Each structure stands twice: as C-alpha cells, then as structure tokens.
Amino acid sequence: MNLFPIKVHPKEHQDSEIIQEIDDLISLLNETQDWSSVSYMSPNAMQETIHGTHSKQHLLQLFKKHLMPKLTSFLGEEIEEYVQSISQQVPDSASAYIEPLKGGWEISQSWINICPKGKNFVRHTHAGQTISGVYYHKTRPEQGGILFYNPNPFAKMCLWGCEEEGIYFDPVPQSVILFPSWLEHQTEPNRTDDPRYSIAFNVHLP
Ligand SMILES: [Fe+2]
Image (cartoon, rainbow, N blue to C red; front, side, top):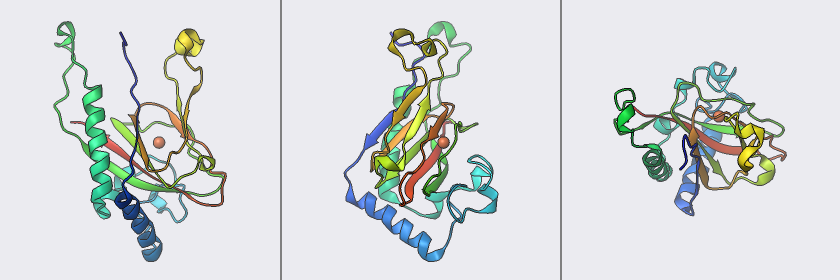
C-alpha cells in the first residue's frame, strides 16, 4: 500500500512532426524577435518576466500565441493520463471533507526557456498551480536536467532506501516530465555553448 504517493510522469515520443513544430517556433522567434513568451532567464526576456519564474507568469501564453497542434496533442494525452493516475478514490470516511476532482483540466500558462551557458533555475515551486510540466527539445545531458527535492521528512532520515536530497532527471530529448506543482525542483546549469530549449507549462484542474 502506497499512502500519500508522489507521482512524476516522464514520457518520450518519436514524432518528427513535433520536432519540426518546435524548430519552426525557434526560427520564428529569432526572425520576429518576439520574446514575449520566454522565461526570465532567457536572453531578451520581457521586463515583466525578468524577476522570477512566477512574476507575471499569467502573461506567458506560448501555446495560445503559437499553435503547435502536434506538440499540444502529445502533451494533452500525457496530462490526461497523469490526471487519471493521480485521481484517487476518496475513502467514504473522508468524503464529507474532501471534494473529489470535477474532471477536466486546462493549460493555464506556457512558456519557452532558452537557457544560455552557465544558467539554471534555482530551487522553487510553481505556487498556486496544480500540475506542472517541462518538455525538452533536442537536449543533451551536459545541458543540465532537473532535480526534484524529496519533500518527505521521514524519507530524509534515509529510512526505507529513499534518497535524502532528491532525484535527478537527465534532459532526455523529445520528452516531457509532469509533476505536482508544489514539488520543489531546480535545474542544473547548462554546461555547453548551445542554448537549452525547453517548454514549460502549468495545468489547472477546476
Ligand atoms: Fe519550475
């Protein structure tokens, strides 16, 4: 029996059309110099998003501004599967106190990270959100992945074989990782001269 499990959902794809959509997006951003949907650490980020991941984050609407049907379809399938997997049945004894999920979800924010050499996101959560995700585009391990911190104080006692600090994921190309928005995480620095492209988003469950 797993009581209070934390589910993280990594998934790769092999769809060349998704890769093409993101290549086209990056070309368009460079061509138009429209940096309104990039994260604060990215070169040319808007002033409003310059002071932190969560500052004015509602302004970041990459998927509404740049339609990428293949990518959003892939993400949608994975989000749906993730939502189903975390929707646990409420025990009868608790049903008076815990409202079950109503069903449905929407991507409330989305943005692209263009992470230059030496940069990384420090430890943070996506406060006020439900599910968060990051999608890696053509990345290499040296470009830095993501570290999830262990939130369980008992696991931090190194009991039951749990990691004390956290679990690190390489930035596997053409893959998404979904996780609870409250789960603390940080990214490792990009150690290459090539920018690391990733697309991040938050999901709201009504
Ligand atoms: Fe984050």
